[in-house]
Amino acid sequence: MTDRLSTLSRAALAGSCLLALGLAGCSDSSDTFDTATQIGPNPVLPEPSPSLIPSLKVAEVVGWSADEMPVAPAGMTVTAYARDLVNPRTVYTLPNGDVLVVQSRGPSGEPKSRPKDIIRGWIMSIAHGDTGGEPKESNLITLLRDSNRDGTVDERHDLLKGLNSPFGLAYVDNTLYVAAADAVLAYPYQLGQTAITEPPRELTALPGGPINHHWTKDLALSPDGRYLYASVGSNSNIVENGLEAEKNRAAILQIDRQSGASRVYASGLRNPNGLTIQPDTGELWAVINERDELGPNLVPDYMTSVKDGAFYGWPWSYYGSHVDERVHPPRPDMVEKAIAPDYALSSHVAALGLAFSKGSALPAPYANGAFIGEHGSWNRDHFNGYKVVFVPFENGKPNGKAEDFLTGFIDGDDARGRPVGVGFDGTGALLVADDAGNVVWRVAASDGSVTPQPIASDPVTAASADSSAASPASAMAAAGNGSAGTP
Image (tube, rainbow, N blue to C red; front, side, top):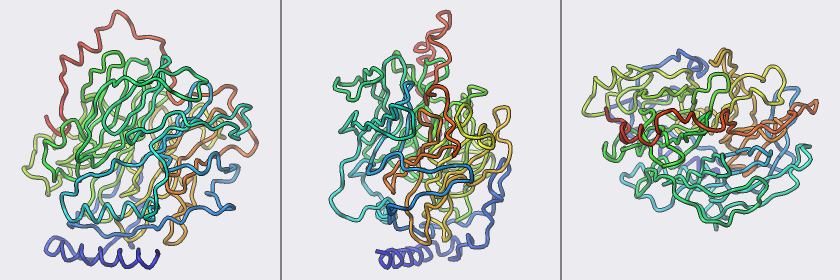
């Protein structure tokens, strides 16, 4: 398998050099570039080096042996919270402390419009440990219960099965919301249930196939419980499928929970995930995967607060006014509107998970900040990401450099696992979904500290919205269903 991957990587790199002839040189400068210079509010942005196919370095997934586990800082203890999962992507804690794990594969049968799409699809299947055998059942939600709060799961139940590539979850008012590849579904659910048998209602449709380039749809609940926020990634790298294919994409939608009416809340976000509310400010935050094929050191993925009505640049620009010359026709008016994100994470780390630690049981160095799951690069000669990092916060804003928190996912050219979603269990310990190792990892304070009560992933600060406020449905109808990437 390793020889096959090495041959494939060399062939793909050679092919990219031929295809990029006249656009860029064949060298990958990732061996000399310091990725630390791209972490923080003011990242170094080198000159673009466009190519039709990027350099490829794919970690072969080998999994974890029985005595292996990721490495955490001193004072932390790592254990396997759940094993033998199938592509665990998201961890979500209910108010009673039960943990839901979303296991998901992307939609099958997506048409490949260009040769590089076929290459990329093959590469991605290898990067997720697809060895070509009979696939195990995925696309389900599993409930994990730690009845006595000792950090060990003593009950495991499949809550929902047969879903369409689920990813995001939210729970409020005895309703479990599930973001599938093409819709947000609402299931009646009482805390404590270990199976859902009633059919859902479709709250709202989401952009789906037949091309569904970025299929993961994340969810977050507004602090007052009135709205859901849903992330919808772009349908391309840089609109090569046309702007019409990007309608309501590269965006975060705001959805009225009662009516299902939706509007574009923020746009120009190529592939947003990790939606969560910052506990000090009540602001929505997300992590974003930026565009490819501008070289190994562009464009940095990032974490940012998400402003209502804001435009973040994709596809016409990145980091504010840095124009992407590949996009035609140019739109200087859109570039002028673009705002820079809050915090860069460096290029191609593929950040997918975000959770704020305030209120957790972790010790002081990690008590106020953001944990970010970095799935890892595939398109540069030196790996980047493949870890969980911690960014300290102060007064609701990043305050310092990201530091490695959970490592050991990479071993040479092999990947034992790849982190995705992050969250906290009912005791306040960090949980990390590893979709290649098929494990959920638990990282707890070694002194055994736990929170007095479970802390839900979506705490609602108000039981109901102010009845004197304007109807959210009517407000959204007035705003209209905007289109991502369209003024």
